[in-house]
Length: 308
Image (cartoon, rainbow, N blue to C red; front, top):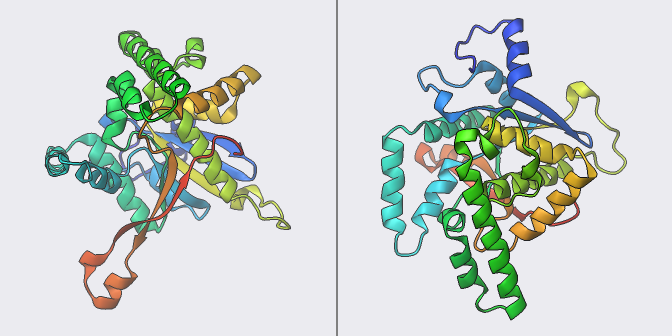
């Protein structure tokens, strides 16, 4: 369980770090992957002090969240025809104090206080992801109709494989499967599923972010105590697999990841990008109207298939 009180001893920090934090070094950047189960979050106690310290650290350049609630709200309201209803559904979800919503709002607020930008690289940020997750072959057909026949066949084949992988994955929920928090199963290297697609592209998005924070040509590498870091916050089953993709433990793992990136890219209407948001309040302060302060999208870069 997460530490919920403010009085943190050295022993608690060490225990927290060992249980919840994985560090992956990409070049001269440390990626601190912190796992948090939404259901464990208690808004009465707030975020773990260790998590807050990681966010506020002078080394932290950006915080990557699983879900950025302002983005989800905007995407829900932008759904053609159903936008208004989707917006009301989102409002109803917030009012019911959903722990996932509450936790991500708490992380967002902590980033605002610490003056840290927020990055999002998850493809599960639009309704189109849910459609692809449950009806992939139909969406692939609709998206591929204008394309050449071989592209249509490819899109449907891959989409069907993702669909079947999803059936397999959900069939194993009782036996942990791809949601096992303690073990990565060997079959996951070849299994295609919508949940795996999220992990593959989040890992690629992190690599892309890390590349942007590497020392520029002519600069010397920083010592460990000042090394820039990216804080990544995800539930444990996702977090350990994202870390695994980043570390590329074997040649087979690397080849599998490249193949998956290419195949998943054929799934239609997904947001294969890294979005960065910053809290902007200068105008609000200038005019004296706090309601004008908000999170603004400052960067939206496609995740490259190759080159990270």
